[in-house]
Image 1 (cartoon, rainbow, N blue to C red):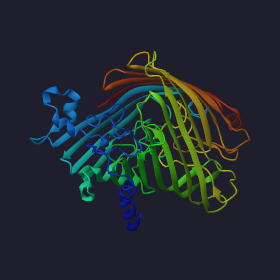
Image 2 (cartoon, rainbow, N blue to C red):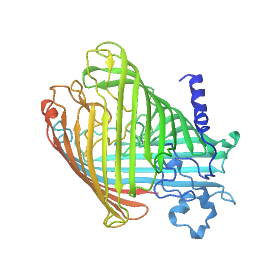
Image 3 (cartoon, one colour):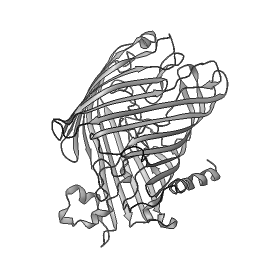
Image 4 (cartoon, rainbow, N blue to C red):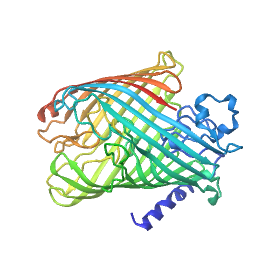
Length: 496
């Protein structure tokens, strides 16, 4: 990216933030735009675990005497100065589990498969008052017992996962120091619900990026400007370098939306360049540069209490080099969301919900226009619990109901049905790798039933079990094999 472009990106958070007057004082470092500012169930003085662990701010624990802290809080704030303003923080994210598939790829090899998988990520931060911070994390992911080749997103490490320096300078613009800061180095990214840029929490190995991020807050507006290249997941220890074949840049801002109760509005622009992009309707990969302009409306209230919603959409344009019809333009888009209503005071606290997703496909493989939507860095599980489908030429919709017989146990039943939107484009696996071709004019891909159980053992440990069955439709029958998928998974998770 050119220096003028980087300069413009660096100033945009303050231009966007200036649209809102300074609100009541918020002591904590702002979370990534589009994520709950204090996490689920958190408060301004006691934030819960954030989606991005580097966003957590445990500086206020210095006000709590050592004798009144539990074991976890003692790791979150290890004082290195007499007043506790210089301190170290330690965190951990891990899981151990097993999963089994019957025909994981609709009948392609390896067919039946099962494995054991392990994740162990360690985080450490050094905070120097309100002005500076160093943050690092190591990651490790391993898969054992499976028959199929293991992708790097499942088995990699140990390796450096995060390593960045952070400098706060909000007081330069008349605010508090942590109202604006810059982070330079290797770090995780996640925006909004993660449909476009995600930590990729489903696989063992989470996404990381090398580059620069600037965050600004004024009043209730939080905005990021960023420029990154992703980190390659190379199997083996201590060898993950920057992927020079891809780049990512953009601006993401979030603000209250007073027209809806507890409503929030996200506005974003995301640029993405990729050297090799395969598509189902042609054998030659495409080099492309994409621009996405979009918006998201979402509710920031406690989950499971009353109405909740999350609706997001965007348009994509850019250049595609290497299409069968020659170089051409990109014209694509997506619309996705969910809605829910919960009865928190009723027996078993039921929550009913509906979610949907639409992502465009290419309508003419012979022309010079590319219509297939591509998410730059989507989550590992995009559509369905058995995880066969990713974004691109796909529509999905389905209801769910969740109930909590106890405070610790939540049971969820979910149904989803899927169609391809264009009958001249195929379907794609979650990393947006072509999964099936374009034969026939049938659109129905299939439908899935999923059952999920989540049990919170304590504040650190939780247990998750998932079972799903995917029944294939007419499109897969015309682009066989078309075996149904059965999937079972159990995971023990640890996080502090």
